[in-house]
Amino acid sequence: MNQTNQRIDDLHAKLAEARDSFLGYPVSKDFDYSELFDFLKFPINNLGDPYNDSTYRVQTHDMEREVITFFARLFRADQDDYWGYVTNGGSESNLYGLYIARELYPKAMVYYSESTHYSVKKNIHLLNIPSIVIRSQDNGEIDYEDLKNTLQMNRHKPAIVLSTFGTTMREAKDDVGKIKSILKTLAIQDHYIHCDAALSGSYGPFINPRVPFDLKDGADSISISGHKFIGSPFPAGVILTKRSYRDRISKGISYIGSLDTTITGSRNGHNVLFLWYTIMKMGPAGLKARYEKSLATAEYCQARLQEKGIQAERNPGAITVVLPKVVKAVKEKWQLATEGDITHVVCMPNVSKDDIDRFIDEVELELPESEEAFEFSF
Ligand SMILES: *Cc1c(COP(=O)(O)O)cnc(C)c1O
Image (cartoon, rainbow, N blue to C red; front, side, top):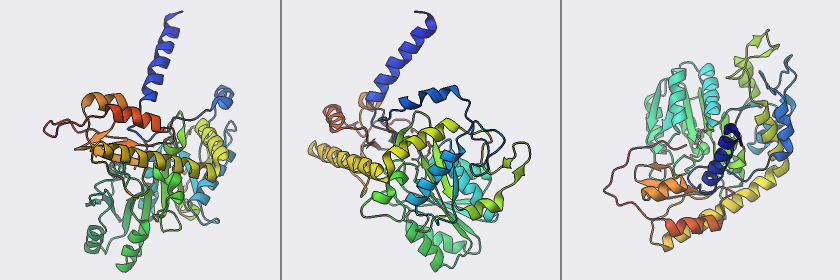
């Protein structure tokens, strides 16, 4: 065997091992795209706006529009006024939501909570929009009282509120309905709500009791990650918003014969094909079944930890179990993201009760004195 082949074999073994002891990040690993391998022969590029085919025809725009329609239904968009595209991930989708918001309201202030994903802070910086951080409640949800008071002090300015549906650490869900009613009470007419639903958006409609988050509930745009709950070998995301908003910011580009409405020009067309393939196979019923399986695993995990005397917490309807941080060996083996004093187990659809049992056998809490460096989670 030559050296390159040896390296590939080693990599394969290493990745397989890492994949099979993995509880800390919200990434599904139970996919099989082998039917699509042949498409790796094509230089698929979804250049430009998915609703305006360009002169480059090695693309999957028609499937991309079907993906957008699928999520438009799932997130209850107005059927005559929706638009979106498949991005490189939730971070780009968040950038797009904030970009539209700023184009619509150039003088706006952005409000986001302490528990907001790090991509949002960077995006706000890139877009150069003034912003204010709002307190989070202990469960990770935005503090509506603090939001209301802060908005009130700035009520002469248009408001962009970044709402999170499934925070990174505790999977807390901000209530878009409550945010909308605060804006209404304060009579701030120029407002925009972007909902960052990277993980939980894909099962948001099935959570019982429902937490308001979608376009009908008052969001102006929603972002999700495709490689998290749905699962994909490549990072992917979706941004869904209103066509009328896009129309206000689009500029035609003669070189590609399309509209320059997307953040990147060349776009990953394989990602679109993969995402399309899965959602067509699963449908909303498949997503719901996946959520119910994850929820049952999370309930099991929480109960088993509590039996062991470990303080395990979970937000209502969440598939994420929060616990005090664990010793280094356990953290590294199970690839657990840690923030401050806590860590979490994310019960993605591929996580089995057997995986949880193996983890519970090994789990050991870190003594509170020792200090470990702050670390970013996904
Ligand atoms: C994962 C995540 C993101 C970022 O998504 P990527 O697909 O990793 O770019 C944004 N927001 C939240 C709440 C997330 O959990």
